[in-house]
Image 1 (cartoon, rainbow, N blue to C red):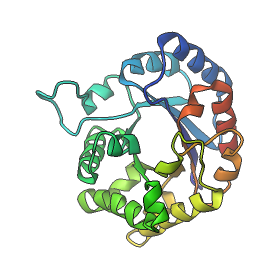
Image 2 (cartoon, helix red, strand yellow):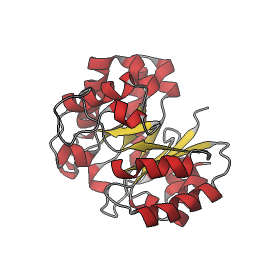
Image 3 (cartoon, rainbow, N blue to C red):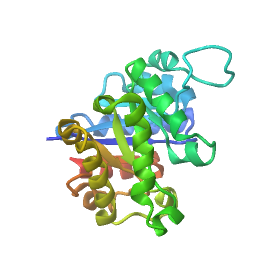
Amino acid sequence: MRLSLVIGNWKMNGSIESNQSLLNSLKQNIKSVQHAMVAVCTPFVYLHQARELLKNSVIDWGAQNISEKESGAFTGEVSGRMLLDFDCRYVIVGHSERRHIYGESDQLVAEKFARAQSVRIIPILCLGELLEQREAGETEKVVGQQLDAIINSQGIISLTQSVIAYEPVWAIGTGKTATPEQAQEVHAFIRQKIADKDARVAEEMRILYGGSVKGSNAAQLFSMPDIDGGLIGGASLKADEFLTICQAAR
């Protein structure tokens, strides 16, 4: 049985004071995890704080981005080895905001995925389509191409040390949410595409859903057979809401 996973993505939010309140609340209320794992991905500048507050808890932490380069003259970039200095377990790669606002290509995402794995940090690979692509019936084509960029460059076995997050772009931060059935359909497509190459990898692969997940809809979404938890945006900044979502994953 796949262990569920709920990851909070703070995006460009937080302050030292508000982070302390949030993380202490999560730590106090998530003291044991039987059927789900929990993590938060913070802005780079708060990784030290997350490590110090969470290091004796069951909650993991990670970063929201990683450079595809190992080191060198790349002003403003953060390398995988730097993330290791903060004991990051996870890093998000290919989030739609990186793809569509900052122009990251499938190839660049694949390079970041590989860089994370080279330092034994688990990449959270985000896949998802724009509204116009969904309306044109291109969801599977777009998601399939994004996944193929990883499989073709890194091999199917590389997925065993990763997490996939399906995030329909039209449902991120908009208040719109894919119905459980819509989300399940794409999750099933992703798992089957992996199974066509390696059934064991597909069976063990954790595929999370992201896109306006809230305490009120989490249980329905997580009840779908191929949805193994969530990558949570805005709701992860509210302790009570995030705790409700974590409870739903159990």
